[in-house]
Length: 498
Image (cartoon, rainbow, N blue to C red; front, side, top):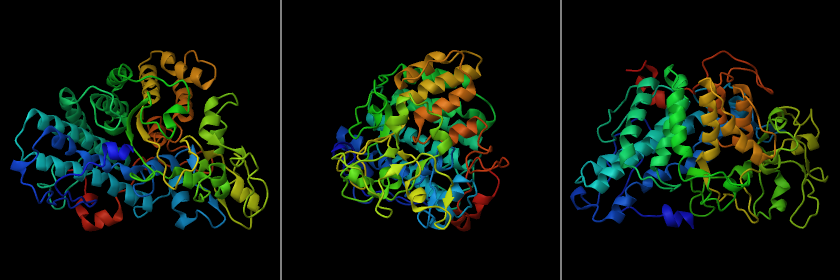
Protein backbone atom coordinates (compact mmCIF):
# COMPACT_ATOMS: atom_id res chain seq x y z
CA UNK A 1 0.00 0.00 0.00
CA UNK A 2 1.28 3.45 -0.86
CA UNK A 3 0.87 4.82 2.64
CA UNK A 4 2.74 1.95 4.15
CA UNK A 5 5.47 2.64 1.64
CA UNK A 6 5.69 6.39 2.15
CA UNK A 7 3.75 7.79 5.08
CA UNK A 8 3.31 5.01 7.65
CA UNK A 9 6.80 5.66 9.00
CA UNK A 10 6.52 6.11 12.73
CA UNK A 11 8.47 8.95 14.28
CA UNK A 12 10.30 8.08 17.46
CA UNK A 13 9.20 11.29 19.09
CA UNK A 14 5.78 12.78 19.77
CA UNK A 15 4.61 15.73 17.69
CA UNK A 16 1.73 17.80 18.98
CA UNK A 17 -0.09 19.89 16.41
CA UNK A 18 -2.58 22.70 16.64
CA UNK A 19 -4.97 24.53 14.36
CA UNK A 20 -5.21 27.61 16.55
CA UNK A 21 -3.50 30.95 16.33
CA UNK A 22 -1.80 30.47 19.69
CA UNK A 23 1.20 28.51 18.46
CA UNK A 24 3.63 27.66 21.23
CA UNK A 25 3.48 23.90 21.87
CA UNK A 26 6.41 21.65 22.78
CA UNK A 27 7.16 19.07 20.11
CA UNK A 28 9.12 16.12 21.45
CA UNK A 29 9.31 14.42 24.78
CA UNK A 30 11.20 11.13 24.74
CA UNK A 31 14.45 11.31 22.81
CA UNK A 32 16.78 14.27 23.44
CA UNK A 33 17.89 16.21 20.41
CA UNK A 34 21.49 15.23 21.02
CA UNK A 35 20.64 11.55 20.49
CA UNK A 36 18.34 11.81 17.48
CA UNK A 37 18.59 11.13 14.60
CA UNK A 38 21.10 8.32 14.62
CA UNK A 39 21.14 7.52 10.89
CA UNK A 40 19.99 8.73 7.46
CA UNK A 41 16.74 6.75 7.62
CA UNK A 42 15.77 8.59 10.78
CA UNK A 43 16.63 11.90 9.13
CA UNK A 44 14.36 10.98 6.21
CA UNK A 45 11.51 10.29 8.64
CA UNK A 46 11.68 13.71 10.27
CA UNK A 47 9.37 15.35 7.73
CA UNK A 48 6.71 12.62 7.56
CA UNK A 49 4.23 14.25 9.91
CA UNK A 50 4.35 17.53 7.98
CA UNK A 51 3.26 15.82 4.77
CA UNK A 52 0.38 13.99 6.43
CA UNK A 53 -1.29 17.32 7.18
CA UNK A 54 -2.23 17.58 3.51
CA UNK A 55 -4.64 14.68 4.01
CA UNK A 56 -7.58 16.89 4.99
CA UNK A 57 -7.36 19.21 1.99
CA UNK A 58 -9.54 17.26 -0.47
CA UNK A 59 -12.69 16.89 1.63
CA UNK A 60 -14.76 18.72 4.23
CA UNK A 61 -12.32 18.18 7.07
CA UNK A 62 -10.01 20.74 5.47
CA UNK A 63 -12.26 22.24 2.75
CA UNK A 64 -9.49 23.52 0.45
CA UNK A 65 -10.58 21.59 -2.65
CA UNK A 66 -14.28 22.24 -2.02
CA UNK A 67 -13.70 25.97 -1.48
CA UNK A 68 -11.78 26.32 -4.74
CA UNK A 69 -14.43 24.52 -6.79
CA UNK A 70 -17.80 25.25 -5.17
CA UNK A 71 -17.13 29.01 -5.34
CA UNK A 72 -16.43 28.81 -9.08
CA UNK A 73 -18.32 28.73 -12.37
CA UNK A 74 -17.66 25.03 -12.99
CA UNK A 75 -18.95 23.02 -10.00
CA UNK A 76 -21.84 23.37 -7.57
CA UNK A 77 -23.73 21.65 -4.76
CA UNK A 78 -27.44 22.07 -5.51
CA UNK A 79 -30.05 21.86 -2.78
CA UNK A 80 -32.09 18.81 -3.82
CA UNK A 81 -35.37 19.00 -1.93
CA UNK A 82 -34.25 18.81 1.68
CA UNK A 83 -30.95 17.16 0.79
CA UNK A 84 -27.77 19.26 0.67
CA UNK A 85 -29.44 22.24 2.35
CA UNK A 86 -27.04 21.97 5.31
CA UNK A 87 -27.83 25.40 6.68
CA UNK A 88 -27.10 26.99 3.31
CA UNK A 89 -23.35 26.41 3.47
CA UNK A 90 -23.08 25.07 -0.10
CA UNK A 91 -25.30 27.72 -1.69
CA UNK A 92 -23.58 30.52 0.25
CA UNK A 93 -20.16 29.40 -0.94
CA UNK A 94 -21.35 29.20 -4.54
CA UNK A 95 -23.07 32.59 -4.46
CA UNK A 96 -20.17 34.28 -2.60
CA UNK A 97 -22.38 35.11 0.39
CA UNK A 98 -20.25 33.39 3.01
CA UNK A 99 -19.60 34.80 6.48
CA UNK A 100 -16.69 34.56 8.92
CA UNK A 101 -18.47 31.72 10.70
CA UNK A 102 -19.22 29.33 7.86
CA UNK A 103 -17.86 25.78 7.89
CA UNK A 104 -15.59 26.08 4.87
CA UNK A 105 -13.94 29.27 6.13
CA UNK A 106 -13.39 27.75 9.57
CA UNK A 107 -12.04 24.38 8.55
CA UNK A 108 -9.78 25.56 5.75
CA UNK A 109 -8.07 28.01 8.10
CA UNK A 110 -7.52 25.23 10.64
CA UNK A 111 -6.15 22.78 8.08
CA UNK A 112 -3.63 25.25 6.69
CA UNK A 113 -2.43 26.37 10.11
CA UNK A 114 -2.07 22.76 11.20
CA UNK A 115 0.30 22.19 8.28
CA UNK A 116 2.30 25.35 8.98
CA UNK A 117 2.54 24.67 12.70
CA UNK A 118 3.66 21.08 12.20
CA UNK A 119 6.40 22.25 9.84
CA UNK A 120 7.53 24.83 12.40
CA UNK A 121 7.55 22.30 15.21
CA UNK A 122 9.73 19.96 13.18
CA UNK A 123 12.07 22.82 12.25
CA UNK A 124 12.33 23.83 15.92
CA UNK A 125 13.33 20.28 16.78
CA UNK A 126 15.90 20.09 13.99
CA UNK A 127 17.30 23.41 15.13
CA UNK A 128 18.55 21.64 18.27
CA UNK A 129 20.33 18.91 16.29
CA UNK A 130 23.85 19.01 14.96
CA UNK A 131 23.61 20.42 11.45
CA UNK A 132 24.92 17.73 9.16
CA UNK A 133 24.48 17.97 5.41
CA UNK A 134 21.49 15.61 5.68
CA UNK A 135 19.88 17.72 8.41
CA UNK A 136 20.41 20.92 6.41
CA UNK A 137 18.77 19.35 3.35
CA UNK A 138 15.86 18.14 5.48
CA UNK A 139 15.43 21.61 6.98
CA UNK A 140 15.24 23.13 3.51
CA UNK A 141 12.71 20.51 2.47
CA UNK A 142 10.46 21.26 5.46
CA UNK A 143 10.86 25.02 5.02
CA UNK A 144 9.79 24.57 1.40
CA UNK A 145 6.82 22.45 2.39
CA UNK A 146 5.84 25.20 4.82
CA UNK A 147 5.82 27.64 1.89
CA UNK A 148 3.24 25.40 0.22
CA UNK A 149 0.93 25.64 3.21
CA UNK A 150 1.54 29.39 3.34
CA UNK A 151 0.83 29.69 -0.39
CA UNK A 152 -2.58 28.11 0.20
CA UNK A 153 -3.13 30.37 3.20
CA UNK A 154 -2.33 33.71 1.57
CA UNK A 155 -4.14 32.70 -1.60
CA UNK A 156 -7.34 32.13 0.38
CA UNK A 157 -7.04 34.59 3.30
CA UNK A 158 -4.63 37.36 2.24
CA UNK A 159 -2.97 39.00 5.24
CA UNK A 160 -2.20 36.44 7.95
CA UNK A 161 0.44 35.92 10.67
CA UNK A 162 3.81 34.82 9.31
CA UNK A 163 5.49 32.49 11.77
CA UNK A 164 8.68 30.48 11.27
CA UNK A 165 8.83 28.89 14.71
CA UNK A 166 6.29 27.27 17.00
CA UNK A 167 8.51 27.43 20.08
CA UNK A 168 9.26 31.15 19.72
CA UNK A 169 5.92 32.29 18.31
CA UNK A 170 4.12 35.14 20.07
CA UNK A 171 1.12 34.11 22.10
CA UNK A 172 -1.18 36.33 20.03
CA UNK A 173 0.45 37.00 16.66
CA UNK A 174 -0.33 39.94 14.38
CA UNK A 175 -1.02 39.73 10.67
CA UNK A 176 1.75 40.27 8.14
CA UNK A 177 0.90 41.75 4.75
CA UNK A 178 0.29 39.35 1.90
CA UNK A 179 3.04 41.08 -0.09
CA UNK A 180 5.63 40.61 2.63
CA UNK A 181 4.70 36.96 3.08
CA UNK A 182 4.87 36.48 -0.69
CA UNK A 183 8.39 37.89 -0.73
CA UNK A 184 9.39 35.62 2.14
CA UNK A 185 8.01 32.56 0.35
CA UNK A 186 9.91 33.40 -2.84
CA UNK A 187 13.14 33.91 -0.89
CA UNK A 188 12.69 30.68 1.06
CA UNK A 189 12.11 28.61 -2.04
CA UNK A 190 14.90 30.14 -4.09
CA UNK A 191 17.34 29.72 -1.19
CA UNK A 192 16.24 26.10 -0.79
CA UNK A 193 16.68 25.11 -4.42
CA UNK A 194 20.38 24.08 -4.14
CA UNK A 195 19.49 21.68 -1.31
CA UNK A 196 16.42 20.02 -2.85
CA UNK A 197 16.68 16.79 -4.80
CA UNK A 198 16.19 16.92 -8.57
CA UNK A 199 14.27 13.71 -9.07
CA UNK A 200 10.73 12.48 -9.72
CA UNK A 201 9.22 11.77 -6.32
CA UNK A 202 5.57 12.77 -6.37
CA UNK A 203 5.12 12.57 -2.60
CA UNK A 204 8.13 14.65 -1.51
CA UNK A 205 9.02 18.31 -1.91
CA UNK A 206 11.68 18.06 -4.61
CA UNK A 207 13.45 20.68 -6.69
CA UNK A 208 10.69 20.29 -9.30
CA UNK A 209 7.99 20.86 -6.68
CA UNK A 210 9.82 24.08 -5.78
CA UNK A 211 9.94 25.12 -9.43
CA UNK A 212 6.20 24.45 -9.67
CA UNK A 213 5.36 26.47 -6.57
CA UNK A 214 7.60 29.34 -7.68
CA UNK A 215 5.82 29.36 -11.04
CA UNK A 216 2.47 29.53 -9.24
CA UNK A 217 3.59 32.35 -6.98
CA UNK A 218 5.01 34.40 -9.83
CA UNK A 219 1.95 33.75 -12.02
CA UNK A 220 -0.27 35.19 -9.28
CA UNK A 221 2.16 37.93 -8.23
CA UNK A 222 -0.06 40.73 -9.52
CA UNK A 223 -2.94 39.48 -7.36
CA UNK A 224 -0.75 39.03 -4.29
CA UNK A 225 1.45 42.13 -4.55
CA UNK A 226 0.11 44.42 -7.28
CA UNK A 227 3.16 43.83 -9.49
CA UNK A 228 3.06 41.30 -12.34
CA UNK A 229 5.95 38.84 -12.76
CA UNK A 230 5.10 37.13 -16.05
CA UNK A 231 8.73 36.69 -17.15
CA UNK A 232 9.67 34.87 -13.97
CA UNK A 233 6.50 32.78 -14.10
CA UNK A 234 7.37 31.76 -17.65
CA UNK A 235 10.95 30.88 -16.70
CA UNK A 236 9.90 28.63 -13.82
CA UNK A 237 7.29 26.97 -16.01
CA UNK A 238 10.20 26.11 -18.31
CA UNK A 239 12.01 24.53 -15.36
CA UNK A 240 8.98 22.34 -14.65
CA UNK A 241 8.34 21.42 -18.28
CA UNK A 242 11.99 20.43 -18.82
CA UNK A 243 11.80 18.07 -15.85
CA UNK A 244 11.20 14.29 -15.87
CA UNK A 245 7.51 14.56 -16.80
CA UNK A 246 5.51 14.01 -19.98
CA UNK A 247 1.94 14.19 -21.20
CA UNK A 248 0.08 10.89 -20.95
CA UNK A 249 -1.57 9.66 -24.13
CA UNK A 250 -4.95 9.34 -22.39
CA UNK A 251 -6.81 12.16 -20.63
CA UNK A 252 -7.93 9.78 -17.90
CA UNK A 253 -4.49 8.36 -17.08
CA UNK A 254 -3.43 10.88 -14.40
CA UNK A 255 -6.61 10.18 -12.42
CA UNK A 256 -6.88 6.40 -12.36
CA UNK A 257 -6.85 4.60 -9.03
CA UNK A 258 -3.25 3.48 -9.41
CA UNK A 259 -1.88 6.83 -10.58
CA UNK A 260 1.13 7.04 -8.28
CA UNK A 261 3.48 6.66 -11.26
CA UNK A 262 1.66 9.01 -13.62
CA UNK A 263 4.04 10.74 -16.01
CA UNK A 264 2.09 14.00 -15.55
CA UNK A 265 1.94 14.27 -11.77
CA UNK A 266 4.60 16.43 -10.10
CA UNK A 267 3.33 16.47 -6.51
CA UNK A 268 0.30 14.74 -5.04
CA UNK A 269 -1.55 13.71 -1.90
CA UNK A 270 -1.33 9.89 -1.70
CA UNK A 271 -4.80 8.85 -0.65
CA UNK A 272 -5.58 5.26 0.23
CA UNK A 273 -9.05 3.85 0.91
CA UNK A 274 -7.86 2.17 4.12
CA UNK A 275 -4.58 3.69 5.29
CA UNK A 276 -4.74 7.37 4.27
CA UNK A 277 -8.39 8.29 4.00
CA UNK A 278 -9.86 11.65 3.10
CA UNK A 279 -10.80 11.65 -0.60
CA UNK A 280 -14.56 11.07 -0.91
CA UNK A 281 -15.52 13.13 -3.94
CA UNK A 282 -17.32 10.14 -5.50
CA UNK A 283 -19.58 9.91 -2.45
CA UNK A 284 -20.46 13.60 -2.77
CA UNK A 285 -21.25 13.53 -6.49
CA UNK A 286 -22.72 10.14 -7.44
CA UNK A 287 -26.49 9.52 -7.43
CA UNK A 288 -27.78 7.40 -4.57
CA UNK A 289 -28.05 4.28 -6.73
CA UNK A 290 -24.83 4.77 -8.70
CA UNK A 291 -23.07 2.46 -6.28
CA UNK A 292 -24.55 -0.23 -8.57
CA UNK A 293 -22.55 1.18 -11.49
CA UNK A 294 -19.30 0.52 -9.63
CA UNK A 295 -20.24 -2.36 -7.28
CA UNK A 296 -19.64 -0.06 -4.34
CA UNK A 297 -20.51 -1.51 -0.91
CA UNK A 298 -21.69 1.96 0.25
CA UNK A 299 -24.38 4.29 -1.07
CA UNK A 300 -23.34 7.71 -2.44
CA UNK A 301 -24.97 10.99 -1.39
CA UNK A 302 -26.28 12.44 -4.70
CA UNK A 303 -24.96 15.95 -4.58
CA UNK A 304 -22.21 17.84 -6.39
CA UNK A 305 -22.38 18.31 -10.13
CA UNK A 306 -21.03 20.37 -13.02
CA UNK A 307 -22.53 23.81 -13.57
CA UNK A 308 -24.60 23.34 -16.76
CA UNK A 309 -23.06 26.32 -18.54
CA UNK A 310 -19.63 24.85 -17.83
CA UNK A 311 -20.70 21.46 -19.19
CA UNK A 312 -21.68 23.25 -22.40
CA UNK A 313 -18.14 24.55 -22.90
CA UNK A 314 -17.05 21.06 -23.98
CA UNK A 315 -17.51 20.23 -27.65
CA UNK A 316 -19.27 16.94 -28.31
CA UNK A 317 -16.00 15.62 -29.76
CA UNK A 318 -13.92 16.65 -26.74
CA UNK A 319 -12.68 13.42 -25.14
CA UNK A 320 -12.48 15.15 -21.79
CA UNK A 321 -16.24 15.46 -21.51
CA UNK A 322 -16.61 11.69 -21.42
CA UNK A 323 -13.45 11.22 -19.37
CA UNK A 324 -14.32 13.74 -16.69
CA UNK A 325 -18.12 13.69 -16.44
CA UNK A 326 -20.87 11.13 -15.88
CA UNK A 327 -24.23 11.84 -17.50
CA UNK A 328 -26.99 10.20 -19.52
CA UNK A 329 -28.46 6.72 -18.84
CA UNK A 330 -26.61 4.74 -16.16
CA UNK A 331 -26.21 0.99 -15.97
CA UNK A 332 -24.97 -1.50 -13.41
CA UNK A 333 -21.92 -3.68 -13.94
CA UNK A 334 -24.07 -6.27 -15.78
CA UNK A 335 -25.37 -3.69 -18.24
CA UNK A 336 -28.82 -3.46 -16.70
CA UNK A 337 -30.40 -0.02 -16.33
CA UNK A 338 -30.14 1.38 -12.82
CA UNK A 339 -33.52 2.27 -11.30
CA UNK A 340 -33.90 5.35 -9.12
CA UNK A 341 -34.89 4.29 -5.62
CA UNK A 342 -37.69 6.82 -5.20
CA UNK A 343 -39.20 7.37 -8.65
CA UNK A 344 -38.58 3.77 -9.81
CA UNK A 345 -37.62 5.15 -13.19
CA UNK A 346 -34.39 4.40 -15.09
CA UNK A 347 -31.57 6.62 -13.89
CA UNK A 348 -30.75 9.19 -16.56
CA UNK A 349 -28.50 12.06 -15.45
CA UNK A 350 -29.45 15.24 -17.29
CA UNK A 351 -26.60 17.80 -17.39
CA UNK A 352 -29.15 20.64 -17.59
CA UNK A 353 -29.90 21.20 -13.92
CA UNK A 354 -32.60 23.92 -13.74
CA UNK A 355 -31.87 25.65 -10.42
CA UNK A 356 -29.31 25.80 -7.66
CA UNK A 357 -32.09 25.38 -5.09
CA UNK A 358 -34.83 22.89 -6.01
CA UNK A 359 -37.61 22.74 -3.38
CA UNK A 360 -39.67 19.57 -3.44
CA UNK A 361 -42.90 21.45 -4.08
CA UNK A 362 -41.55 23.25 -7.13
CA UNK A 363 -39.72 20.46 -8.96
CA UNK A 364 -40.47 16.85 -9.71
CA UNK A 365 -38.54 14.10 -7.92
CA UNK A 366 -36.92 13.19 -11.25
CA UNK A 367 -35.55 16.70 -11.69
CA UNK A 368 -34.41 17.00 -8.08
CA UNK A 369 -32.66 13.63 -8.04
CA UNK A 370 -31.45 13.12 -11.60
CA UNK A 371 -30.16 16.46 -12.90
CA UNK A 372 -26.55 17.53 -13.11
CA UNK A 373 -23.56 15.83 -14.75
CA UNK A 374 -21.54 14.13 -12.03
CA UNK A 375 -17.78 14.17 -11.53
CA UNK A 376 -16.14 11.08 -12.99
CA UNK A 377 -12.66 12.47 -13.52
CA UNK A 378 -11.13 10.49 -10.65
CA UNK A 379 -11.55 6.82 -11.47
CA UNK A 380 -14.08 5.03 -9.31
CA UNK A 381 -12.70 1.52 -9.26
CA UNK A 382 -15.03 -1.46 -9.07
CA UNK A 383 -15.71 -2.11 -5.43
CA UNK A 384 -14.64 1.39 -4.37
CA UNK A 385 -15.27 2.14 -0.71
CA UNK A 386 -16.23 5.41 0.96
CA UNK A 387 -12.67 6.70 0.41
CA UNK A 388 -10.80 6.53 -2.89
CA UNK A 389 -7.23 5.35 -3.35
CA UNK A 390 -6.46 7.79 -6.19
CA UNK A 391 -3.60 10.17 -5.48
CA UNK A 392 -4.78 13.78 -5.75
CA UNK A 393 -2.49 15.87 -8.01
CA UNK A 394 -1.71 19.25 -6.47
CA UNK A 395 0.70 20.01 -9.32
CA UNK A 396 0.23 18.43 -12.77
CA UNK A 397 2.19 19.01 -15.96
CA UNK A 398 -0.67 20.22 -18.16
CA UNK A 399 -1.30 23.06 -15.71
CA UNK A 400 2.24 24.31 -16.34
CA UNK A 401 1.84 24.04 -20.11
CA UNK A 402 -1.21 26.29 -19.83
CA UNK A 403 0.51 28.58 -17.32
CA UNK A 404 3.44 28.94 -19.73
CA UNK A 405 1.01 29.83 -22.51
CA UNK A 406 -0.67 32.41 -20.28
CA UNK A 407 2.57 34.06 -19.25
CA UNK A 408 3.71 34.26 -22.87
CA UNK A 409 0.40 35.70 -24.08
CA UNK A 410 0.47 38.31 -21.31
CA UNK A 411 4.00 39.20 -22.45
CA UNK A 412 2.69 39.78 -25.98
CA UNK A 413 3.98 36.48 -27.37
CA UNK A 414 2.27 33.42 -28.85
CA UNK A 415 1.30 30.59 -26.51
CA UNK A 416 -0.18 28.13 -29.03
CA UNK A 417 2.68 25.61 -28.78
CA UNK A 418 1.82 24.98 -25.13
CA UNK A 419 -1.94 24.78 -25.62
CA UNK A 420 -2.20 22.67 -28.75
CA UNK A 421 -0.65 19.42 -27.44
CA UNK A 422 -3.36 19.40 -24.78
CA UNK A 423 -6.14 20.10 -27.28
CA UNK A 424 -4.78 17.50 -29.69
CA UNK A 425 -4.90 14.87 -26.96
CA UNK A 426 -8.49 15.90 -26.23
CA UNK A 427 -9.47 15.34 -29.85
CA UNK A 428 -10.35 18.95 -30.64
CA UNK A 429 -8.90 21.35 -33.18
CA UNK A 430 -5.68 23.23 -32.55
CA UNK A 431 -5.59 27.00 -32.17
CA UNK A 432 -3.72 29.81 -33.86
CA UNK A 433 -3.20 33.03 -31.95
CA UNK A 434 -5.02 32.01 -28.78
CA UNK A 435 -6.12 34.82 -26.47
CA UNK A 436 -6.59 35.00 -22.71
CA UNK A 437 -10.34 34.39 -22.67
CA UNK A 438 -9.97 31.28 -24.80
CA UNK A 439 -7.14 30.11 -22.58
CA UNK A 440 -9.18 30.56 -19.41
CA UNK A 441 -11.92 28.42 -20.91
CA UNK A 442 -9.36 25.80 -21.88
CA UNK A 443 -7.94 25.79 -18.37
CA UNK A 444 -11.44 25.07 -17.12
CA UNK A 445 -11.96 22.15 -19.48
CA UNK A 446 -8.55 20.59 -18.84
CA UNK A 447 -8.15 21.28 -15.12
CA UNK A 448 -11.80 20.75 -14.13
CA UNK A 449 -12.08 19.88 -10.44
CA UNK A 450 -8.38 19.96 -9.65
CA UNK A 451 -8.63 22.93 -7.28
CA UNK A 452 -7.49 25.73 -9.60
CA UNK A 453 -10.66 27.47 -10.74
CA UNK A 454 -11.19 30.00 -7.94
CA UNK A 455 -7.62 31.27 -8.32
CA UNK A 456 -7.93 31.40 -12.11
CA UNK A 457 -11.12 33.44 -12.04
CA UNK A 458 -9.52 35.94 -9.66
CA UNK A 459 -6.34 36.25 -11.74
CA UNK A 460 -8.40 36.78 -14.92
CA UNK A 461 -10.61 39.41 -13.21
CA UNK A 462 -13.73 37.27 -13.72
CA UNK A 463 -14.38 36.55 -10.04
CA UNK A 464 -16.85 39.37 -9.47
CA UNK A 465 -18.87 38.70 -12.62
CA UNK A 466 -22.18 36.86 -12.78
CA UNK A 467 -22.49 33.27 -13.91
CA UNK A 468 -25.13 30.58 -13.69
CA UNK A 469 -27.33 31.31 -10.62
CA UNK A 470 -24.66 33.59 -9.12
CA UNK A 471 -25.00 37.38 -9.27
CA UNK A 472 -22.22 39.85 -9.96
CA UNK A 473 -20.79 41.55 -6.89
CA UNK A 474 -18.36 44.29 -5.96
CA UNK A 475 -14.65 43.55 -5.42
CA UNK A 476 -13.59 42.58 -1.92
CA UNK A 477 -14.41 38.89 -1.80
CA UNK A 478 -11.19 37.71 -3.41
CA UNK A 479 -10.13 36.31 -0.03
CA UNK A 480 -12.11 34.64 2.73
CA UNK A 481 -12.46 36.31 6.14
CA UNK A 482 -10.40 35.03 9.05
CA UNK A 483 -12.79 32.85 11.08
CA UNK A 484 -14.72 34.46 13.89
CA UNK A 485 -13.54 31.82 16.36
CA UNK A 486 -9.93 32.76 15.59
CA UNK A 487 -10.46 36.51 15.94
CA UNK A 488 -12.45 35.93 19.15
CA UNK A 489 -9.36 34.22 20.60
CA UNK A 490 -6.86 36.68 19.10
CA UNK A 491 -8.20 40.16 18.36
CA UNK A 492 -4.82 41.11 16.83
CA UNK A 493 -6.01 39.30 13.71
CA UNK A 494 -8.52 42.10 13.17
CA UNK A 495 -5.82 44.78 13.03
CA UNK A 496 -3.94 45.99 9.94
CA UNK A 497 -0.75 44.08 9.11
CA UNK A 498 2.28 44.95 11.23
